[in-house]
Image 1 (spheres, one colour):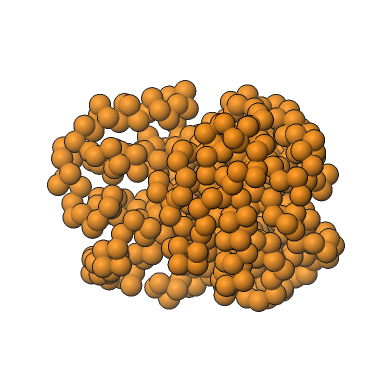
Image 2 (tube, one colour):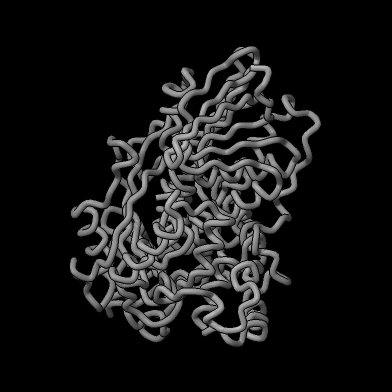
Length: 503
């Protein structure tokens, strides 16, 4: 093995936790390789409710520390990536049949004050008969509450962490499964295989980080031949996408009869994202999908509160993800902790750091604390740095997205308003890497429909590991929701012709 260079950290898993760890470690000066068996964020990390939030409902389970830490992280991430993370107001119509109003108000008071809120406005009480936010709500609901949280493009959050990691020296391998990891001579010998090229690569690493999410136990036992007393519990969360059916940019949070809460969020301009369910899941994480019972459940929850009734045929699309929650023995899937747990196994002088659980909002803190676990192994590594660092494209002056868009209008007057917003939201200050020297729309190359131009696709291949048309249409962007079937097929045909080695 002497001819194989030794690296510091090998990270398995290209979701938010793995990408966050790779970024943090690379920024400390460690040599890092990250491998992901599919596309970045193809699993759980692109199938969330798209929120950076403290978790209002976790207060009911006395998760005060978790909520406080998540609220603090909410503001950290808002500063780091104001292009893909932005404030959103949530309207909670009150039903006297469920939680009492005083309990909701108390919860919102705690939510306002637990995390040292600075940027976001606090909660308030609404008269749904008079306030405009009550217009789409059934008249029997007269009282409501409004509070702040943040929206996030979850898949892009993962990709931007990977981009930052790579620019700080990390190697990122997508569609490359870790086929074997074995302890040999006080280090790890790790083998990967690309599903695109078939190439096998071997690495030697001082530390192995298992951030495989729903597959964490599989990696632990099958790939690494190890074991742990800790485990994850797989909980299925499904969402539906429908046409937006109310005016305004506010989101809604409704309480269902079973005490679960359902988010109804504006999505991609003219659509709404509704979710989620919490169901114990026993199958393969790769096979997860929203079933008809879940779709009916979500529609019924919305129809309980809104004047406009949604029907099954209004559902434009669905997605479902498997949340790898740390198994704390709770019977109710909704009550299972969203906290994370580390398991550091130092057998044979070759440490393996296993990550169980976690949530998108606390990924940065998780990565930082994970690196603290490795202090004694890498005593000369750099100090904590991510709390004040922008993510790629997020270095917008004063983190003011509105001012940034105004500047874009002056810099790119030839772009349509929709295109400026699309590029601004996804790429922030890196828009010039797409626009290049273009002085009109024709300079962006072939137009495939909506806001999708050739220049963006080529940027995503060159800089963000897009290897298939689907990587672009659904995870790097949401163009799939705005293109017809024929337009999507035309783009796929073009992509496969331009990049035949990836097909």
